[in-house]
Length: 307
Image (cartoon, rainbow, N blue to C red):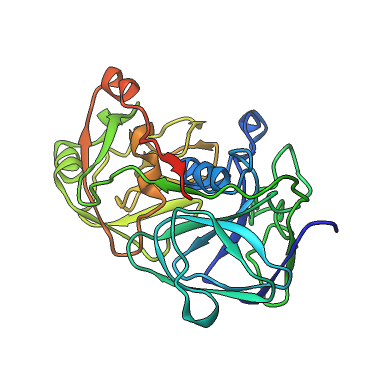
């Protein structure tokens, strides 16, 4: 390999290689997957001179320790994790970082939020499957055979030419306590009056059993009428209500079809917030109409010169 190596000295809670995902394969039963917040991925890549969807490491809950034998140019975006470089230097967030040869980057737990992304100049060299390098653990695709990174894994960046341009990014402001905005789903009518009041008036907590396939919520029981629905297409952000009455927000690696009633769907502008919901976080919902949802564009990052 002609790129720069990165060695895993200690894995985090779940470190996966992710890019922009496998778009357009839903008809074959393949979820799009990819980074849980594509805007944060794009910002990290821009800070190191990559295209927006280049493969990066998505970290959740606790980060790894990474060894850079020949150094590297990296960027960290998303939730700020506790992070240290050589000789106690703090690893800055949302900016271009130039690491010296034999430097170790130590990432701990997030200060706020839950997920972050590490991009390296050139992007990580991973053979694509169906046009994407993203790990899909349930089938062993992408990344390192689809699995989280382990001790001893060695990744390589793709070769990158040209000089280093130092940049700094400003993430969009987010009100973490605000309710998630949703549009009513096709089976909202399947809920009883009590179920509607529970869903739209209740406060839920993110269950520890949540993962990239679905964010499971615990809280007031959402009562449905017991109707049987045919299998239908579903998307990330769709909120299903299974028989136990505890809603599930479908995630990035979730199924592309489902038979539980879909009572609402998180709007596109709020999808990046799903990536930062940690276990125990509170979740509330508020409805908006389709026209408003379409008019609300996802928050944008700003990137500027830093030198």
